[in-house]
Amino acid sequence: MSAYDHDAVPKRARRRTGGPCDAERAYWPKFTLEEVARHKSLKDGWIVVHERVFDITTFAITHPGFHNAGQVSTALAITRNLGEDCTDEFVAIHSPTAWTQLHDFQIGVLVRDGDEAHSEDVNRVATPRTHPVPRRNRRPMPEWLSADREFWDRYAGGVDERVLAYLDAQGYPQERGGVEARGGDEGARGAGEGGGDEAAFARSDGGKEGDATRGVANVVRTALERARRAVACVVAGELVRRVTRATRRP
Image (cartoon, rainbow, N blue to C red; front, top):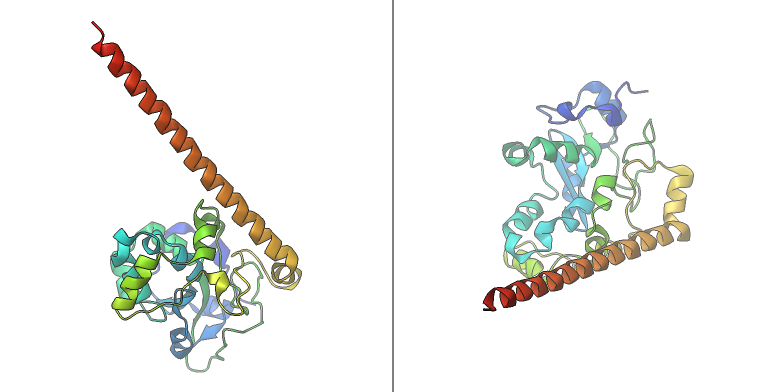
């Protein structure tokens, strides 16, 4: 049993400066760079930073840069690093907050001589069972990410077509549609979920209904927020008109 506890790593220690220690390596499944390189799309994107492997699919495809044509440079920067060891670039430009967020997407470490490498379909759950482990069609989904108002629309709806056209022109063509539209993909799992009954439920109709309910809830919240803003604009406009009329009276 490993002495490392991923969930217990304090925020100040999540900004890594080197590779994993022996205890951390014992905690995680091991992957080769060749395996990482197979996951280079927005619907299935892994990266490597300091010998640690991260599945950032749910973060990447829902990132604002992929839903705003004015942020195509951000979209390109993320896309071109999928399936790659991007340690130097990540270290150079990312803030402590980004390091803290990245921590929640770790799924393994790079294999070293003498290690047993695992495939993405590994069904073994490391100890303890409360961190994201690669399982068939299951992905890390931190609560802070899925709680965002726009998350479920973006996750299911896919990337803005104008951004996709830009990525196509830059040599990084992407499949259209959301992650859930990917052939055989059953969605994402929370970073705190384990295997067994929880994973089985996530794959069942109950899990799908839960995703659908959350999706509808987020759509409703978005609609209500837009309606609130629209009403506020109307009220503000009416106040301005009344004040203008009042100031014009003799």
